[in-house]
Amino acid sequence: MPHAIVYRINVNPQGGVPKYAIAQTEITLTGVRGDRQKDRQHHGGPLQTVSLYALELIHALRAEGHPIDVGTTGENLTLQGLDWARLQIGDQLAIGERVLLEITAYVPPCKTIAASFTDQQFKRISHKLHPGWSRLYARVLGEGTVRVGDPVDLA
Image 1 (spheres, rainbow, N blue to C red):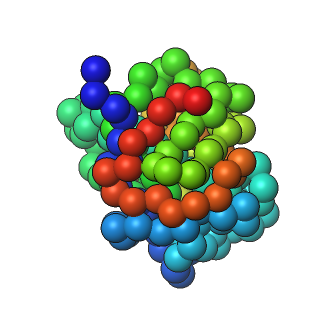
Image 2 (image 1 turned 135 degrees about the vertical axis):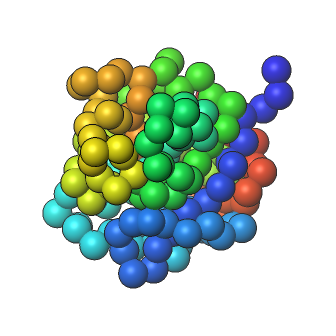
Image 3 (image 1 turned 60 degrees about the vertical axis):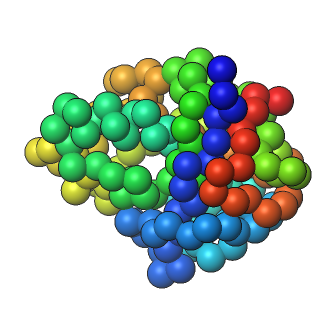
């Protein structure tokens, strides 16, 4: 089986969604270089440094008729090739040469991503309602540069 990879890196220097594609960035203990969160009360901080989502789930949601696209729900890293439904809080992901992330939470969906869903049904990616479909938050255990195409391995 081929490695999972970083399919796309997504940032928005103004904050909010959508987030836009870049080829590489630095992942630090305090955040993703080039990105900003508008709502610092509910996003960011040491346990929510990086937001992750699966390309396969984006494709599946589009097949259901939702207008979701890569970056429209605010994920910093769109990953391809992981068994998303099996990932759990506490799992660690090694990305590229040095970055190490630890999954800390399932991201609760909110109305700011409603445009990505038919009839604004953003709760379609709620972990409580649809386990295995949520975006994930991670904290940074190892800093470094992340590039599109970098391998991603369960550590």
